[in-house]
Image 1 (cartoon, rainbow, N blue to C red):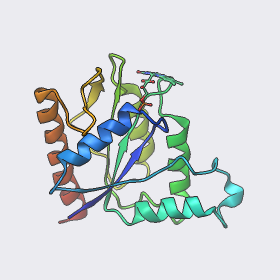
Image 2: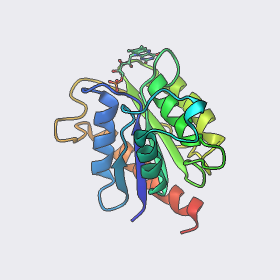
Image 3: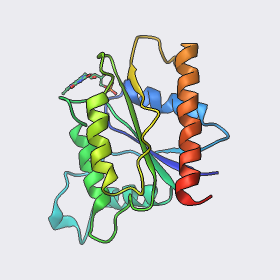
Length: 183
Ligand SMILES: Cc1cc2nc3c(=O)[nH]c(=O)nc-3n(C[C@H](O)[C@H](O)[C@H](O)COP(=O)(O)O)c2cc1C
């Protein structure tokens, strides 16, 4: 089964994007193997450390490289992606010639209590990732407005329409990975 590196842009304990990633992992059961990859222990990117990065950076890059594809699940911070996510992405691109994203198709989605549902952050993430990943899935776009109770404590999506829509996203991502990796 294809392995997906799941990177959540929020460090918050009660993150709604973390909840969304968990719910997606449940929907993907039997189709894709989701691996949640932490980014909260990475130092701020500094090119001085490219030659001898910290253990957390090596762990992070190794975990991404052990997967076939990448899923970014991100909040929107001030109309862009959170700095923690950009920091993790930058580490993934270095050192030069050792780009952890290369050859790995990617997809982006996110949720916010706001009406635009992380749409602007996702567009930024697509721009950033498209210079590195083999391809970034264009559609379906998931700009999910989060409402209390949308995802329960077991990671079940309580709204049937949203559940079906996200199941479609997972199926399309699985097909996209197969197409892009020549399966
Ligand atoms: C620094 C900061 C900036 C934010 N900027 C936006 C924004 O631009 N658009 C938006 O929809 N929500 C914004 N929010 C609200 C987040 O959508 C909300 O906090 C959400 O719960 C974050 O996702 P998380 O629970 O996964 O951390 C911002 C929150 C913070 C802390």
